[in-house]
Length: 183
Image 1 (cartoon, helix red, strand yellow):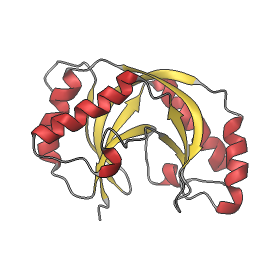
Image 2 (tube, rainbow, N blue to C red):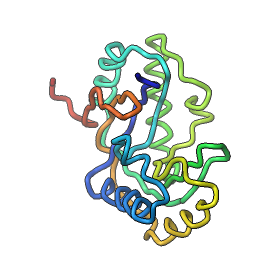
Image 3 (cartoon, helix red, strand yellow):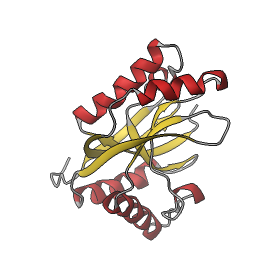
Image 4 (cartoon, rainbow, N blue to C red):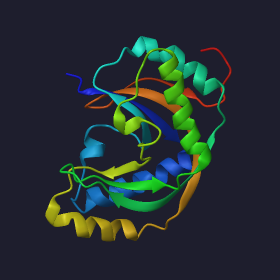
């Protein structure tokens, strides 16, 4: 049964491979395999909700994506949230284009009567790319050390935006940024 939906920003193949490298190193060390197990894809979550109408979002996202260009990204920081999920992430440098991209998406939703939850409101949103979830507390320091061995920053582009249902992750649709062609 679905636990919710998320709108995700996907990377170009080279940047995606850099994130997958981190996932695989953490899996080989048996620190965290959850993202691989739920069949996730490297991403930055732009919006998430336990209940939405995918059909209503599809036209909004398709129109929005067609008006955007691929977005430069620089994953430059390793971080963790102060909660019990023990998530480790790579955070992009919060560039104005990235922050505007998410803010304008929330505005597009608002015009259609869809409200962004508090954590996804532009003034609260923290962009991040998860690399490990549910890391045992006793292994957090080791996981940070493993991630510090990555050669950061890694740069690339956000190329696609999609809607997934989770968990496990199932992509419902995605659109290339700047693709004006009708599907």
